Image (cartoon, rainbow, N blue to C red):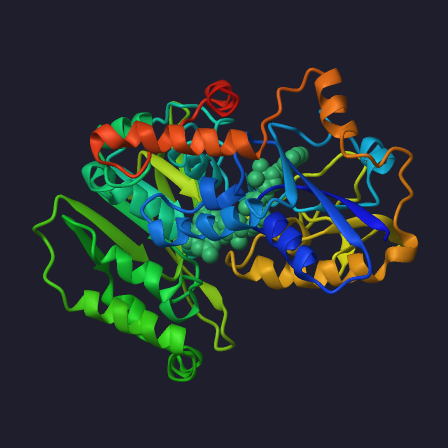
Length: 449
Ligand SMILES: Cc1cc2nc3c(=O)[nH]c(=O)nc-3n(C[C@H](O)[C@H](O)[C@H](O)COP(=O)(O)OP(=O)(O)OC[C@H]3O[C@@H](n4cnc5c(N)ncnc54)[C@H](O)[C@@H]3O)c2cc1C
């Protein structure tokens, strides 16, 4: 029987689900899958994006681990596509490749002053608190008043991590340097800004409700934001999520505030205009009050307001990165594709090359969505058998030999088990489920011990 030698680049949920779906699919050929991952550990944003105080979501790792442990997938960690292995290498050794490299960069925000010291991308902060090895270990948490721009779940994660008392994070897997950094934070007020109204936010109700449960943090919402227009009233009446969001916010309106040492403010109908600076450092945010335009959007009112801040985070979306030799849509930050089949500038299919997950679809949607993504992509991989590559050297032993010849210190699945055990052991004396190892060389050392 023919064997499909498949390379998958990116061991986040999209790549792992793709492998799982292919293995379980009905097909007229055998499958041999190699999963390449630039980090020494798998799971992508589930490990390095999902907030540490969301253990239920982090628990998805258990299901992903079962797929890896099925014995039918080889993992090559600490291998960077574009540097350690190239598209030409993959053509020589595989019949096809699926890219599932996700997105880790912050999308830009075009507001004057965004480049000032003290203005950060949410993705960078997330990578810091989730212990991503490629980000600095130190994070400047020196501001009492902080702005977060954005009205999606990442904005809520960032606001919550800034406002939450560090001791309440000790039960999680946060690295020690993150605990220490948050512990010393002088923050008292976190201001979240959204251009539109409460009925137009992209928060999940659960994420929003969680803010109201933070110890010693008052939720501050402003009565002026609840004078709903018809479009908002219709959204609340017709959409369950919006209904719950409105209910949660209104419960907070009725709450007594004033006793907590920290406050988390939600400013709706607030469009950032400018970040002002003093000596090159963020000093305030100027924003324009907006109002519903009657069509579900907003328009400016001309009323300008200003709040003093010492730091600012933009949480306005993630953005994918280009990969050597692979088509890339610079505007959307994705690999251009038709249902996962990669296409070139002339709209022609690039045979043997596929995409799935955030790098296919853009950085929206939950982990579960990457499963349906993968199903669509895998359907084409299977049906395209006639146009797969014909590799000159398909034998499995060729890959570790190639990486070793290039001096790549790759990790494998056993290595991940070693690192996993090591992190769990680090947590034990403190009664914690795990403490994450952050430094890449330490991760590789623990993996290959
Ligand atoms: C801050 C944040 C919080 C989130 N919280 C939740 C939540 O609570 N619940 C939920 O359901 N969803 C959540 N999500 C969404 C979820 O993380 C994504 O839907 C999902 O991770 C996308 O999967 P992916 O596999 O496409 O990308 P990723 O998870 O990003 O995986 C891509 C992998 O590819 C690797 N890679 C990239 N480039 C290369 C290269 N050149 N060579 C080799 N490997 C490479 C990366 O290291 C990474 O491991 C959150 C997202 C963010 C950003």
